[in-house]
Length: 155
Image (cartoon, rainbow, N blue to C red):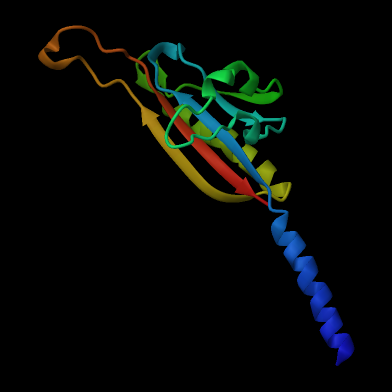
């Protein structure tokens, strides 16, 4: 009985260590919805770690947070991977071959991460698109937009 309790305690400690070592990884896809192939579409992956604490300040009673002392350029990483994707639009409109090609490229990346032991935890997406001409028909539409998706993995 003593050995059983000792073994259970050791296993419980090991499982606690495993749970505490969960890691997360974010992969972002940006797919341009700018016509004529002018936009840039990519799969982007950070290749070096970054500690958010170096860029975090606190406010006391809602007053100055000292964020002005933190430089944005210091938050940029130098080591990242970019995988070229195709744009959603060609010169004549939506290009379904480009969309299927992007799906194949993204699937390849997701399969690679799965083979490395990463589990797809959640997916978040958003769109910023051309809203058309301003009210009253005066002016131009911007003709710009992106479709962004963040794939969050854990292991």
